[in-house]
Length: 179
Image (tube, rainbow, N blue to C red; front, side):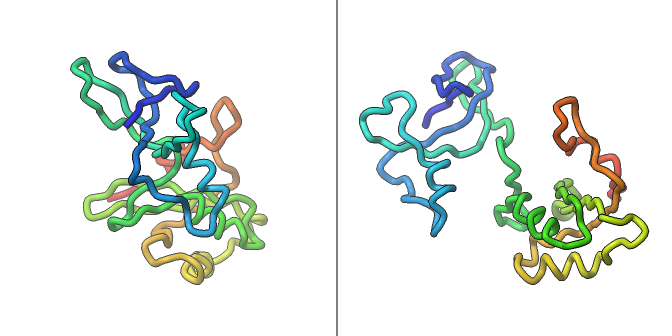
């Protein structure tokens, strides 16, 4: 296991966040019929790129403690767990964004007492004629497993953005009242 910074240099100091990379003979050979995802995940070992060894970019962020112990900090991507299943939020967003009446959709996961709640924030083409929530859920149900269907769908005139112009997912959390 390697802990590497954004420049793919090994992290040895405590409290510096980096991404976990795995190496060894037991790595998987790639994603089924997805060469692009395989090439992004399995890369030449940055510490010794000429020896032909591949390492797996996990997407998990961590830091080392003062004794060398590893503490998980979060994820680099938008992968979450719902009912024990790995879910890429972008997959749900892509399905919702395919609806002709949707300009943009973003999905956020919220912790909840029983299980996490998937919430879709949707910017409709015309706010006066919103696509019905049932239709959007059916659209998801037609191509996604049940655990990937958003529990909540909230319509907004626009999505909040951060200083870099990217959607501010943290700001979206104020729009949902979870009991």
